[in-house]
Length: 290
Image (tube, rainbow, N blue to C red; front, side):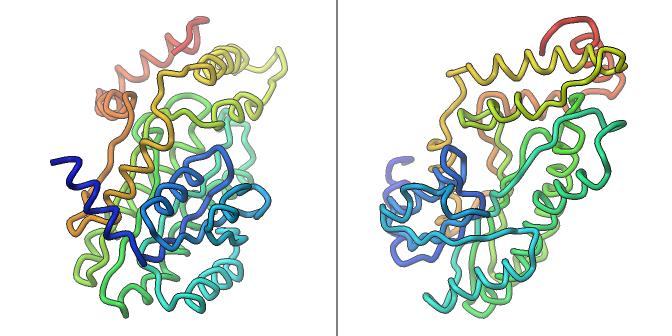
């Protein structure tokens, strides 16, 4: 049954126009672009810098510069897609960024930048394509969130809260868009084998020895370094297949919970807050790693 569904979805991809954000090499967006292209879709892959999407254009995909925090950039990208094709069948809001660090010390201006990308950028681009999808009587919007939105690990407050907000917006949008024939899917991945962990290790701020958060920093840095070497996490290509299946299905799922760490994270996020406080305090305040 699963094989038949996959074949059906691959046939349905022919001629569909797919716009994807955050397609830098080595990430989830890059894998999503490759999967839709493999299925015969007309793919428009985007990133802030076109040179970060090496190989996609050579494979036959369109590559466009797009800064989701810039309204003119959004309008220019959507105009280029519609001028070339006249439609947008699938939008995948995958662009995202993180900012590790204790909330007491991360500048609010930088926190706003994360929200501009992870939340407001996805919303602004959705608003730009919804009238197009409404006019063509259908479409799909796929928002890539994270299990970080369900838990509150130290140093992940900025990223996790932005993803929690994106999840809430996606759930509301799904109900609002249903009468318009636009399916909205929330993607909630756990840990995936990408370059993100290596980047996270280098982005963790090095705090002075006198900082009250120094012990947490050391533990979190070690934890991220171990994850960067973990080869048991599923590859981004597996998630890309799930996303393509959902986007091309006549009855898309409400949510895609993906990866071996996803369900445990959601369950952990539903534990009593006092218990979560106890666990995180012990794990990050006593020299142990999570």
